Length: 148
Image (cartoon, rainbow, N blue to C red; front, top):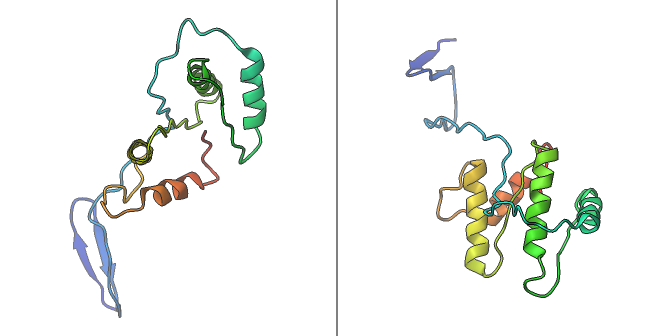
């Protein structure tokens, strides 16, 4: 069987007898990043410790597939609690991805997902017509990845 070889910068393709379309990407895949945090806020050095609440959140979050909502009046410290918890998690588990999603309106929610896709370098994220929510959801479903 005869073959033809095409060579370039560390690229190659060999074909024998082929009866169909050939799809080959000429773009080198991006190197996946190490786990990171997208929390856009610095840790508050004056954070008032709330060990009981942090422990409750940690306990509930330890169950696979869990969901947690922090509910309360504005200004009581829900965001600060979430920020502190995220820093503690990353400190204990550097292999953990931590994502912060702004959900104050639809545009910010979608932009948060686009930011996640950019940070983790999900292939296909650059296409305007892509369903960014589905793309990120599929990436998050990979059981090898641990995230919160």
